[in-house]
Image 1 (cartoon, rainbow, N blue to C red):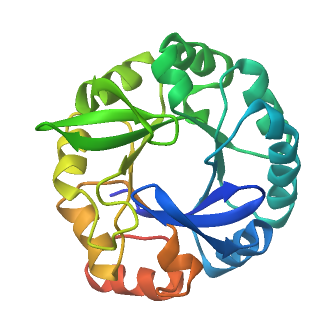
Image 2: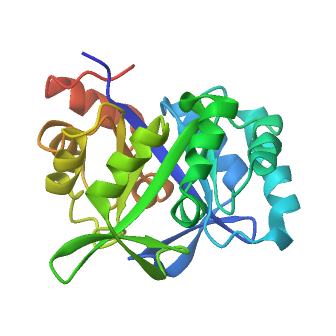
Length: 251
């Protein structure tokens, strides 16, 4: 059985790590370089960095910050936010990223997934899917969760896999920052229909929530932010807990 991965997420705004609830009410969570280094030392399996308000204007800052973080860590590093072309991906990989995450750009131009998978390999391409339950349907949202794309979430995840995505980063906007648990039912529904890994994101508040999303939700990885940033749960303690529950993790 493949080991389950624990992934801290650095949401970046104006060069600082931030965390909100349901994608709003952001508060400062510290220096991203220091946090990244600490997580690598604590045994995080990977790190995700998302520039949540990325625009062309701050692209240079993003590359510089990615480079600084990459120098401090020795674990796989995924970078997302404002990435919309082969050139953007090349810049991130050259700065030290191992994988890139695309969201709005993929919804706008689905062929971008094919292009990036062909150019850099599927293992490099993560499609971030922000989903919200609207009028009885799980619907994809873009532009930092601000806009509904009016696309069915499960169908979109299947299309992303078919186009060459190597991984899905599934964030439940309804659960994000609430600490009430991951969207395990939706995660399971998607995981069972895909052959590529699904990273569950949004809602982690306890160690039990991770156990739940790995067993009931069939997720390959659990991603969280605030519980790690504010030292509510330690990564070594979380891994010990999961092993006690017979869930395989890398120590």
